[in-house]
Image 1 (cartoon, rainbow over the protein chains, first blue to last red):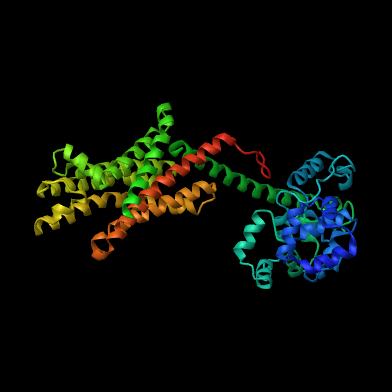
Image 2: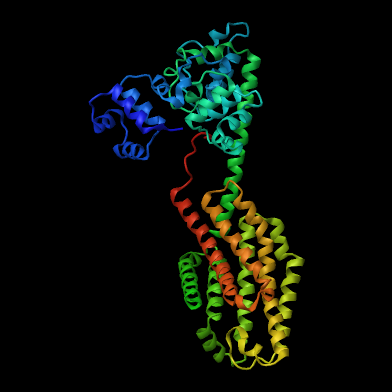
Length: 248
Length: 245
């Protein structure tokens, strides 16, 4: 649920008192018309709060937590290992598989990926939303989210497939799964890992702690999903070409 | 009101046909040009004034109406072939060009010609209204003639419909899906023409509306696909993001 304009203005007065709207927009890189429109409609987007918080050196997660709809964000539990791993991109996972098989079979896992030689891409990645939900799903999660928020299951799935999730749904998903509330905001790219309180190197550590079997299975699953998506895309592409050829 | 609809449909169809001329000259999907040209001719023949002019040149025995039937048959046949080919509906393609399709085409054509010859068709009259008013026998024959003339287009559109529904529900580009929706709507409209004999006489305007809805849906649908393909070729293959090869 977007943030009510009244609450937003109270918050804004708290972090940037006596600052004009145009100055706020200039510093935070928000278009003035965008903010004006949001204020007129009475609903301010979460991204607006995040951008302004960053510009004024306020942690965006605690800024959001100041609003009623996001009060759960005050809970700063650390993310679980599977959540951390879900936020590693598929190419990075595959690189880790290759690096391990190249290293001595008996060597320590950490030695296989010497620090600095392979830095993980920052979250989010191309399928991070879906991978995150899959990582925390006990099989009934989607039902619970749908019951709690009223979103139709097919609309929820469509958002996951498109690799996006509205912030309030991301938080509702975290709550329904009983995991750290800010994780979903990392997976959707609204806030960074550091802003959500993930320790630096946490994803790398989680990756290193995976056994060879776990890592290979995970990478295999990701490859299979990617393969299916590519095949579907190619199939559609061929069909479209045929339509152009005959009716273009 | 109906006159406005008729002339504007004619204009739209004619303009699309003219727009296809350059690609027809280059040899790209010439059939599409023929389809639009045939549709333009068909609309021209269904409007009172041009009908009378053309029919009088053909001997004032309503030969122009027979010509109109076969122009419609040809146009819908080519539409069926192109669309089933383009949308990869092989089963539908076989239903049009295979033994069944040819049998339906042959039978309806034969019916149209035989009934036409049985009627006393002297005296130009658009829609054969004057012919139907002559005798009871002729009134029934005009009904049969019209039914036979609508049967083949309805057959083709019912064959096309499942493929269009599939395309609308697919993950193809949105312009293509909108086009498929238009073609599907046109197909439904043509299928509805089969029920004309059961409409109460007061629904005369409805029959016009359905006919022209069908024509406009087909013209806009086909034109939209052409527009989408031009846009696609101009922009080139889009760079892939998440699933780059």
